[in-house]
Image (tube, rainbow, N blue to C red; front, side, top):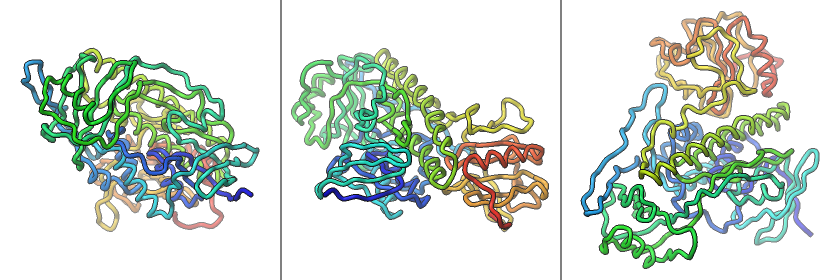
Length: 507
């Protein structure tokens, strides 16, 4: 007889999206299981770019320093000419600011990023169940019953919710019959992690920019002994991914016989696609990450968008399990699907630039700091404000502050954790919001617990005395209201599951 068990959330897939979701649920005390059909963790460098917005998320999940230690900033580009000469160049580096503390492009091989996330998951008391495959599921009104297969046999898992974070060929998406429209982009590429002789590891070596028949890049992977090979190959035919085959590919593209591939750690030949799922939710079942959208690798948006999907979904699942209205879960697709659609347009545009000009520059548009949800269901603007100022739905900026005890504070420090944060800016004491579970309230000003002596918060958020700013658990502004609109704020809090507590006290 099959074994049976129960949990709140079953996560299918233990890549970056599934791991992020698991960490977020674990720190909220939500029961979950995370299964992965692979027998061992993914071993490739594929999604190696960590964008500034994702670094902010990693700070909140308490892994950013470990991720930085596992990688480094991107090396300069070395572009080789047909005569063998070369020119070195680098994208200009932007200095971090008090409102945007992470602006350096970070390169970390995907297998190292996922290793850090698994370690954090273990610290929170959970682990990935490898060699465990989802083979079927049935959805009822109040739950989902999933059938999984592992070395110990078959098991039925009854979960309140199922999340498919199981990649571009998602079993969950296919089983639900969700459309995955898009297109093949007419580019097939090799990506391989190799040990190579004959190249320095302090630059990103590039040949044949703008010529898809000759183009090949070898990028040193920080904190490892490996290089990542990237290069387009013909759409048809076999590709030799052995050390000898990749050595020959390099020789043909570079006219150099001194670059020798000694070992191949991981390799793939794939056709680039741009696809977006028709929907992200079907009842109690969700898809996220590559199961919901696949991108060409240009611009490094895929892994980052996937992590941010999970970061958006995690707190909403926990809130609904805790009593918030089920309609809150509809905002996951409302917010995240347009982001993926925009990112698909960006990565496709960057791929075209790479094909035509060899242009690999990583501008501000790929940092993902400007993404947000203004004008959508969870954005409440109820204060007189200039249209150029920060609005509800925007990313909540960082700011340097001071505690009343004299210590330095950051706005991000106030936000860190699974809670909501409410800031009252020089708000009259009589307008204070009642305490409730999972809401941290801070009064900013002479009579409050936090000081904004330099005016950094006022400037970053465009605040006036009496304004209240509600920051969501995922670091976006949920609401900006003035003291005359506090009933609307109370209504908002109820709608996201932050019910008023019966006993008075501090948050």
